[in-house]
Image (cartoon, rainbow, N blue to C red):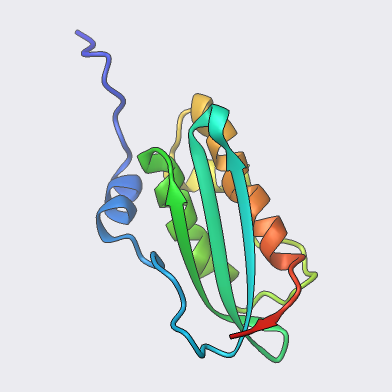
Length: 129
């Protein structure tokens, strides 16, 4: 019997519960870039902030609005972004995030918002805080 409720993978539950990387970088964090994407029609907004060291992401944080899959994907992406240089190809994309989270196909549109925010971050111009 189906209850009509979406089931979440153990990885989504873990990331949604712990929210690693959630929040903002502290003032005075140094050279910081930000990338943001929004798709209100999909019910998703994601913003990444990254502290740079030598042009590479040394620390990454996110803020987001969306379903548990969106938030879990943003949390997962923060760890994958550490070590990436500005202008580099993203170390992850929506399909890889979906696979790692065992997300259903209907969530791919929201995970594309996470991917777009990653691309915006990696294309960002540093700003000093």
